[in-house]
Length: 231
Image (cartoon, rainbow, N blue to C red; front, side, top):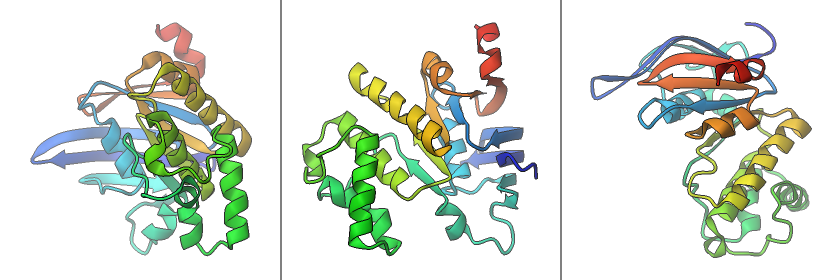
């Protein structure tokens, strides 16, 4: 596989209840870039993220991550999954403090308490929630909860961060904050970020590449250089 590619898809299909919900003959996702996946409800956006993040298996076709075939014989899926993080549209937070939520992945990886504390502070600072360590999850607003979920995801230093509709049902102020977090994380750590959205303008603002799906089919992939010509 080409060195600067994180993912490569070949002849991918996904069926649910006998219906083809995803059909992508060919797609590549480069390292260190931001990708927006856009399309109407039912276009296959979340299904694509689920397959790339190893939360679902495709019905047919091949998916490669860093040159290794996902679900390929002899591959350690658990090890591959640890290089990624997924934040769902309605993220689940444990009924505990913000600090413990963000540190969860670090704790199960064996980080020391001091290391956890320092990393939690760093991640909360990045998402604009400095001083929220002792707040309870149920006390947070929707935008704050989404940022805590992102902090938890990035705490484990993933190569790839998946965000499913990260700004849906969030007020304009929190949307602006989250967009800045996405840009800063990509700029600072070169994390590859793939997010789904219904907002075409948002995809154009944030992404280096826009993947357009319709009816489960890949319609077009636009680079940032071609955005102006496409509208």
